[in-house]
Image (cartoon, rainbow, N blue to C red; front, side, top):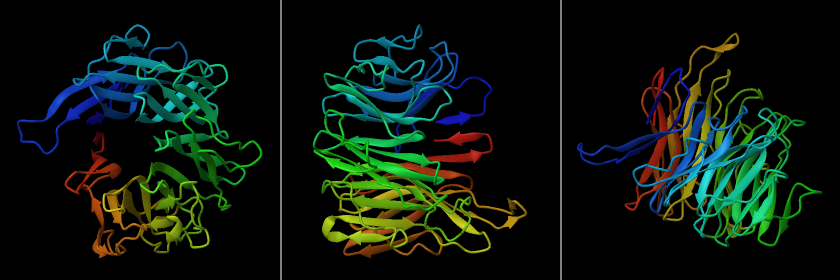
Length: 424
C-alpha cells in the first residue's frame, strides 16, 4: 500500500497482498472506500467470509468532524452501496456510521467478539474541537448497537456503549478476555502535572466496571481500573497495546521518557516499556527500580528497552507499539529506535532516521545485550532471545507483530522510501 502526497481528499484503501509467493502472485484486489470529503481507515481484520475495517468519515454528514465507520466486505473487498448516506446492509456485508452532532467518534481499535459481534475502542468528543473521552462500543454481528447519542452510554441485547474517563483521554487498545469481559488500555493527559499517563480498565461481559467516582483505582467482580500516576511532572507514559496472557494477566507495551538520562522534559528520549500485570492489573513497583522490577511469584514485571543517554543532548529515542506472548512463554515487542545528534542553537545538527526494532525476551521480559548497535542474539534458560533493527535508509517503524506457525515472526511496518511517499 502506498500513500502519495495529493491535493485531493483521501479515501480508504484496502489492498490485499500475498506475501512470500512466486512472482505470478501479488495484489489480489485494490479497493477504495469513501466519498467527497475526508475519510480514513485505521484498523482491519480478516473475518470468516471477508474483511472488516474500522474507519472514520466526514463524507456523509452536514457538519465538520469525523464519525466512526465500520465496513464489512466480502473476500474480494466488495460491500453494499453506501453512496447515499454512508450506510447500507447487504448479504454478509454492511456499512455502519456511529456518531453525529455532539458525538464526534474516532475508533483506533477493532476486535471480533465470541458472539460474532465487534468491539471498537477509541474516543468521543462533544464537538469537533473539544477534549476527547474514552469510548468503547460493542455491536452485534451486523454492526448494530444501541442509542448512545443522548448520554454517551447505552445497553441492549448483546450490545453496549461506554463513555468514561477524564477529558483528553483515548483508548489505544482493547480485547475480549477469557471470562467474556473486555480489557482496555488508554492514555490520558493530566494538565495539572503536565503528564501523560495510562489507564488499564477491565469490564465485565455487560460492559460494566467498578466505581471510580471517588478514587482513581478500584477492583470489583470481574472488573478493575488501574491508573498509573508516577508523579513526575512533564513526563510521558504512552500506552499502545494490551494483550491477555496465558496466566490471566496482561501484557502492556508503550513508551516513556520518565527514566531517560536527560533532564529536559521537552526532549523525546523515550524508551520502550513492557509491563506484565497479574489478573487484577497489578504489577511490581517499577518507580523504585528506575523502570525495572519483577515479582516472579505473582507473574509481574516491568522492563525498559532503549540505549543510554550519551550526554551533550545526544540521545536515542525508542517507541514501543505492539507486543505479543510467544509460544515458548516469552514475549516479543516491536517499535522503532533512532539516534538524535547534538544541538546547534535550537536545532539538531543531524539525526538518524528511525529503524524498525523487534525484541524477543524470556518469560520475565529479559533479553540479550543490545547496547552496542541495537542488535543481539542470546539464550536465557533455554529460550531464544534477540534484538534486531530492520529497515531501509529512510524512516521505518514496526506497528505490529505476530508469531507464525513455524516459530518465526511477521511484522507490519511503515517505511518512508522517498520524501513524498510512504510504503506499507
